Length: 450
Image 1 (cartoon, rainbow, N blue to C red):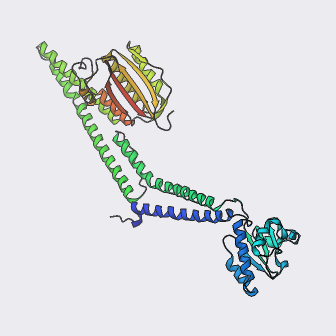
Image 2 (spheres, rainbow, N blue to C red):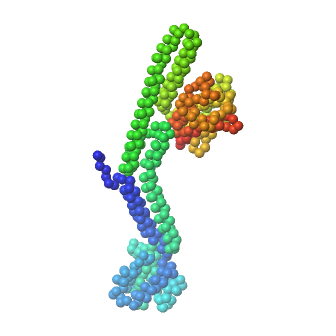
Image 3 (cartoon, one colour):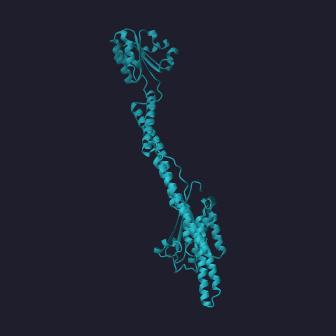
């Protein structure tokens, strides 16, 4: 027995895909938070940051000079970097910006320091020296301490200028969006083999042979697909064997029927001879009808694109040429992918039934909700509702109105339904009010039909 890897099961597929989705989402969130943290910080002039800067400056005033550099490194935070300079000329802000030392905007800061004459320098990116531009961030604030040393705060350039609550909302939205996208991609990857399996099962269940499923996806799905392919092959072989056997039987019946007719020529009683010939002719007709039915069941006309309305017009014209009353409404143009010869046989059979048992036929064509609907109405007596399902059984006839003199052998409707189901559609019958019968053909529209 072939061994399979433990991680090949559908359970592990789900677990690994969920884990991968969570990991990728976390990485994306980390990247977003990192960028949002830089872009979303307010400028250093923000009131809260100024209060923090004032508090740190007061702390530095009470710390020995030898410990200030180390303390500055410890106080560097997410909001800004802290650096301490023993002398003014070490502060990396251009000298021409000294005029900002007593800018009225920083009155609140000097008031909190308790020294109105304290030097304050605030710079934008353009104010930094060339050397500082390579080491500092974009915005800087320098405060003179009581011993005339300086403490400087610098922070990154603000592109967004959004507050904390806005950043939180954006982060949550990003988490939801990224999680949804990743989960959708993972679930579609898992669901695609199941969808193909369901579509193939529906196609085969409708009476049409489906293409063999590809063995892709988790172990359980591959095993189910392989079992489905094997089942479809076995059922198709049984159907082919049945068709071949019945075709052979029907074909072999021709010879004894021919001999019976030849021997009937020697019967002297003309009445008995006539009855025998009638039975032989009837059996011969049944054999021919059966052969035609089985050949049709075994054939598979290739799919092609054709104009469905033109096909209907062709059938209508054929019956009109034979003198029958057949009406067709304005048929919408529709290029359909199907088997035109098989569909023509279906329409011919349905129209023939309508003109034979209902005196005339009316055909309508419509397309909506991804399906084509062909309706054929007649003005006949209709059919008892309990007998409508039996009309699709081979060799079933309603003797009262559809006998052998006017009808066939009950193979037309079964053959027509088989053709329609091979197209993935359905053929139904229903009575009209106050009288008449309606045949409804429903065919699916593929993405290539128009």
